[in-house]
Image (cartoon, rainbow, N blue to C red; front, side, top):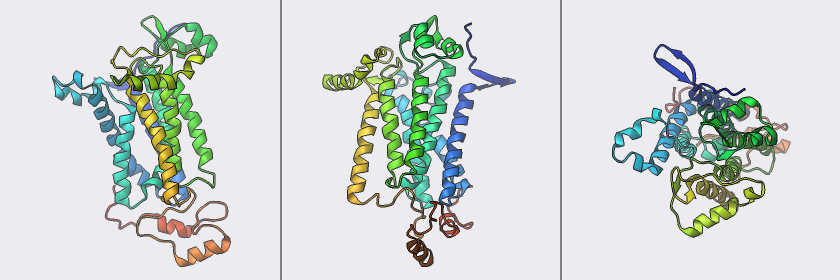
Length: 349
């Protein structure tokens, strides 16, 4: 039996609360919970991450809107004020990432923490937030791929009927690309959980691993979508993108139609490729230059803080980093150095 899910969860008088907003809120809170939990291992107070969310979410929304409007400027140039009408739709995840990173980076610096150390802690929260957030696209019947047969969804993918029904739009079934990306991100979350327990992992590398994993998945999944932001690039660039995506054709997939937004190069595919290359390059450069001398498991100190000599001597005597116990957990002494003092003038409330 076919049925369509309403985009509105409930209404209070003239105010309607949409499922999309609820799902995004749940995504943000889940990411926050993971960051707070991991932060406890390093003695970082939970209110540090809560304040970060208050800065990161608005920064992400602004970045997501600016990114979308920049690539769809023809739709707004005649009436620029409509660029502010975010409730009419039009945001992009890459813009949200860029905005959130800029906002969070400024916040980390103000609080005196290393960007790379805190970004590592937040990486699992980012990817789980994206995994949950994609279900908002499912409710809205957006960000889907090209047409498919109902049998492909039911028999090949073995999807439940409530997902198959929702993927029928105006009598046509479409690739549930929201689901592909959500599942890819959930696998990535497990991968990050495993990586952060490895002794070889250096500061910043969990965050960069997130970009590599997400970039790979986004590159191939984006090629299925029919709403990709695009631009007209040189033929060699279009040929490169198509060539890199061609393994998907061996699996029976066909590229999504790009006629909605025009162009011959998908912006998200190009950025995904650049993020992958950039993240790998940064890992190599940071190791070669000694910028990633700290390990992920090392204690985290704020700018100007240093482990006490007694703690350092105790750590050396035990054969473990100062401020850590043999089981990888921090001692109370390290928590004393990591936590923010009550009189911190920069503390955000």
